Amino acid sequence: MKTNFYPIILAGGRGTRFWPLSRKKRAKQLLALDGRRTMIQQTVSRLLPMAPAARFWIITNPDLRPGIARQVPRIPAAQIIAEPAGRNTAPAIGLAAFLLLRQDPGAVLGLFPSDHVILNEKSFLKNLDRATQIAAAGGNMVTLGITPTRPDTGYGYIEAGISVAEAEPGITFRPGEDVLRVRRFTEKPDAQTAHQFVDAGNYYWNSGMFVWSARTLSDAIKEHLPATAARLEKIAAAWGTRAFARVFKSLYPKCENISVDYGILEPRSRKGERASALYCIPSEFGWNDLGSWTALYEHRVHRGSGLVEGGNIIDGERSFALGAEGNYVHAPGKFVAVVGAKDVVVVDTGDALLVTTRQHAQDVGKVVKHLDAKKLIKLV
View 1: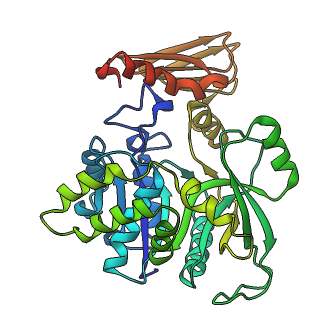
View 2: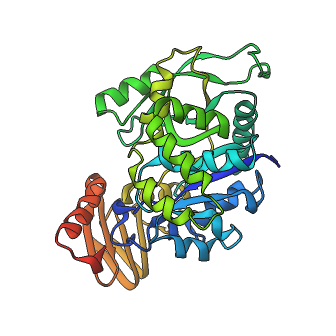
């Protein structure tokens, strides 16, 4: 157990690409998409070997906070923080860094999305433990990069540089250990570029999981996002006082709306491969970020969960498939018959029905934008 390791779980997203099952007050992190436990419950469970529940912090929004508190009651309620306004990952993890720096100057933070699936938890914990050691050794930032299995335009990429084969100041690397320096972060590429990345052999999917000390992260925010840092420091100074809610509500929405990648990691990588102290640990532990119905279909096919003849995944009371291939149907409590359809996604929630294809499942979030614009509140 890492006595100074603090898991920070980001759980504020709406999961719009999983509409109509995912809603504003019941987003995908609160859903059991992959078994009996919900995504947030799985995330907390796999991190408990690294730290006791008292060291967990969850950053979410007011709509989801009550549901998260019910689902993970072991996490101290005060450490389930609802942002007064969504400001992306840099202010969220930055808030945790400034809060913990005041409580534990030796704190090491791990940033974890709340909606990922990891099949090989033993391998995951091994890599995370190593990342924690490297982060604790100095001003280092470490990411878990996923070895790509295909060209995918839905993920960001990490370009890795030289292998760290010899000891560096403050860090002792094990012989033959695969720890790489980071050259740059690239957001979601087009199809041609994704093929080039995979063919190059030194690119990894950006898992969104990072490890750094509270001091290293707070210093980086001060350097690259000084206005946001000043506000976060004031918010952290008010923690535990009667003024906290007021200060938080007033200052946090004024923070820059920017991701960790854009706000901190990309400018830091421009310092140069050797000067940035950015490291990547190549990882293969059955990772999937379940970003769409298509991703869920592929994950469940891989696991054989709910799979019936023809490569169909059908959640229903009973099912019948004839000449149907590669479909995903979610209609609990109903008899489902699929005839002659291919690569279709159908999701029935009683008050709404989604019909799309696996190819276009990434566009489901546009339905929610339409519903928001039409003020159809009950459907979002």
